Length: 249
Image (tube, rainbow, N blue to C red):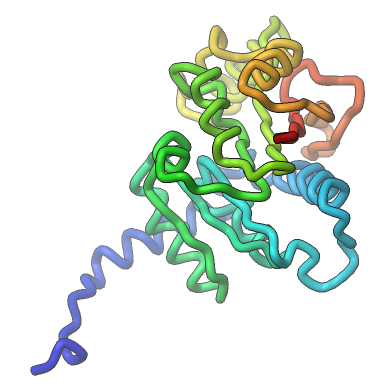
C-alpha cells in the first residue's frame, strides 16, 4: 500500500467540524449578531481600503495584489469576502478550534485562504507584513492594548492600513453590550466582555498614536432594534465603533 492509498481522515472528526462550521455560518444561529453586523463592517472596511489604495469597488477583484491579515478571524466571516474581492488573505486566530472550521468552509466555498492558529505578536516576531490588517473586536480582549497595537503596527507595511473596531466605555455600552447582549438577549455567553476593558474612541486614538500609527477616520456602528440592522454613523460612537489608521513610515 502506498501513501496515496492511505486515508487518515476520521469521518467523525470531519462531521464535528462541519457541525461547527454550519453554526458559524448559520445566519440564524448563535453567531447571528455577527451576521447582522457584517454588512455594516464590510461597508466600512471596503470603502476605507478602496480609498487608501485607489481601488474601484465596481470592478472585478478590486483588492487584487493586496496582502491582508484578519486577526481574530473566527470562522472567516470577514476573511472570505476579502478573498472574493481579490485580496491574498491570512486569517489568524488564537483559538485553535476556529481554524479547521474556517479552513473547511473556505474549501467548501472554493476560496484560497491561509488560516493559522497564531497571534499578532508571533506573526510580528516572524517579520511578516501586510498592506491591510483587520483588527475587529479584539483589542478589548487583550491583556495589554498598547503592546498588542504595537505588534499590529509592526505587521503593516509602510503605507499600510489597519481597521480596528471595539466598544466604547460608558453606561450605554454597559447596558447594550453586557446587560442587553449577554444577560437579556443571550447572544453571547455571560462574561464574554469585561466592561472595564472597553476603550473610548479618544483613548483608542491615543493608543494608536502611541503605537506609531496615524488615525485617519472613525465612525460608529449603530444597531436599530426595530429593523434588526446595523448602520454606520459619523456622530454616534456611543457603543460600537470602528477606526482606520495608517502606518506612515
